Image (cartoon, rainbow over all chains, first blue to last red; front, top):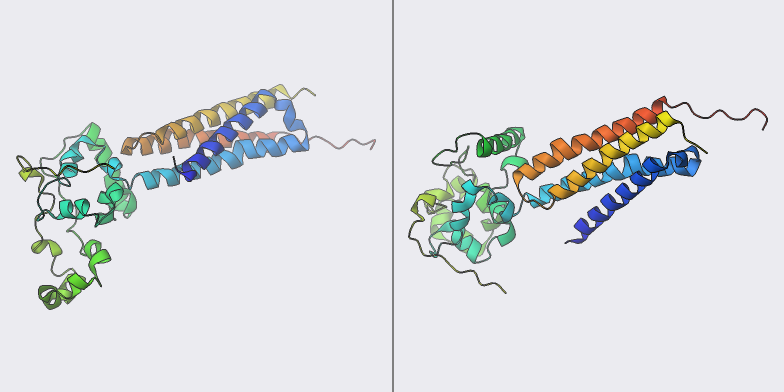
Length: 204
Length: 71
């Protein structure tokens, strides 16, 4: 449990204790001190706890565990474990080029909760489809993958910038005229996972 | 000093809504799933908002005690 989560738990517990006190002994609110206590218990602390909870949920939704919590995303999680250096997400995940606990969010920063209004609405639709709708056979991005997500880390990196191929198309990569995935095309490829050997993650 | 029964009833209602809302909000934090976020917002958040509304309505409509004339 992080310090933030401990603080949130403390705020919720104090709020519930004070609410119970004022609600069970309403005569307290007759005095000035009691009114201040009621104001804290019934307004300040609940709003603080809700704001902190919202922040905690936003942070939690960046985690790999959150993204893979829906059954339909399970193969995407397995694609991170493929024992093949050509598999782009797998080699990023296994070599710590992205934080493992936030693997999905690092490369999909504009997805659902973190995107624009349309992305948020699509996120709600995903929840609906997950429970009540029909999940499509093939899951695709709504928009072509943005090179920004790759250049966020690779731009300025020596091995990237000094590669002759990259030098030739640097401007096109920056403007998205050419997608990084045109050459680095072994991405999640979830329909090719069958029979692929898996890397066994060492647990310290 | 005994509180006005109407004030006591409203405070209990507001407290119940707030307590329930906070408990639901706290419980969703142990469930890393998109549905948990919706439950947090649409159930916990709405209950907390309703509790705050009941409290604000109570203090806005409750007559403030009159200052004693003999003081």
